[in-house]
Length: 250
Ligand code: 13P
Image (cartoon, rainbow, N blue to C red; front, side, top):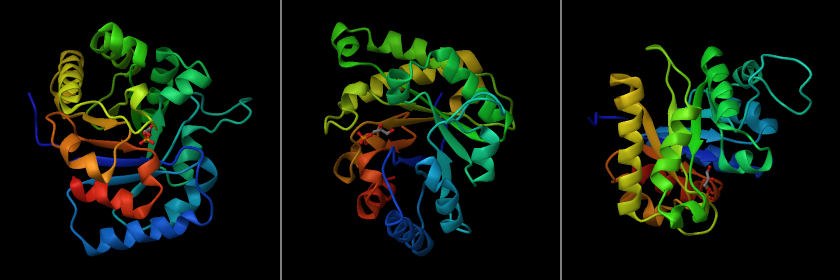
């Protein structure tokens, strides 16, 4: 069922970063130029920095992405950005359905699916997030809940398009706690099986990222788990040395 998949290491800066962050971007760019890495690297800064980071990474192996988009192409949506705006700013990826947005803005699976479909329609790869709360993990229903969530959040796509899935247990985000490699293995296998059931061969090629307190110290172990095809990194993506440690672990 598993195929050889190039890992994707994506940095989600969340609401962090300023002009000084470009130093970190330059370090990553230089190290990518000087070293051969076995991973696709994506940096998702805040929307205000997306264009500048995209310009800074021009002709680099790293790509950029946004942290959110609206499902509509344009209109009266104060504070939102469209997929075309992401694209125009140089973004080739967009994170949709992060648990922080599902929680703060009550984004449903249907909302996330609509955003992901809009991304695909605009030539942007959606990184579709899923993950369970501690309460659900402790109830023993994590796999059922996450599989249902991701299947309801993924739009159909054709051969010319790509979707990426990110499993981020909410209790592991920004807490320093990571899921055990056994739990990650079990969850990623379940997600893979569900994606193959839904999308057939295309489902076997979808990158499934793990996110939640990924650091250089635990990256090798997590990235070594079957069906973990990369990482979605929050805090550790803000410092080039840490982010590079994770990229090199891939
Ligand atoms: P941390 O790596 O800071 O736990 O954040 C994970 C995350 O939410 C990435 O999207």
